[in-house]
Length: 165
Image 1 (cartoon, rainbow, N blue to C red):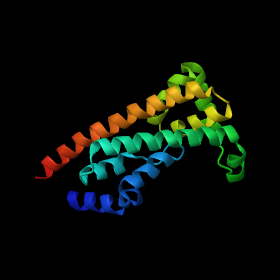
Image 2 (image 1 turned 135 degrees about the vertical axis):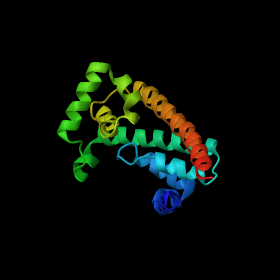
Image 3 (image 1 turned 180 degrees about the horizontal axis):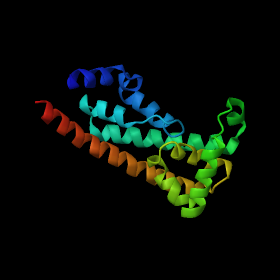
Image 4 (image 1 turned 90 degrees about the horizontal axis):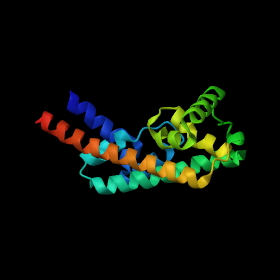
């Protein structure tokens, strides 16, 4: 029963169907839309894709997505057209957290924060946060998260395979 469930999830998710290209889009979109990458990463690792390739694609795509989110906030016109500006409660929570703990710290940890973390980069763009500081905090944070996802994904896959046998 567990193996049937795992099999259906791994073969029915659109990002997984397209392999590393699907992971690229999943990683990019997950920077500004709450779409988790962990399932795609786990499925690709389970499918035998090289963990280094998964790490590189996930890191690169997440960083590209971070810049897209920053630009969406910085430009603002597209957000107004799409009516996708962050909800006021999430925007205010994000600003309060960034003010309390520091923008760079929150941008670094934002990939780990559900929902609020998805709007942090957009808000950094709307507030015209320094692009150099943003780049350092965002790329470091997304790289560390990618390392953790792939590392724990590899160990989870080994555990899962050994427990099914």
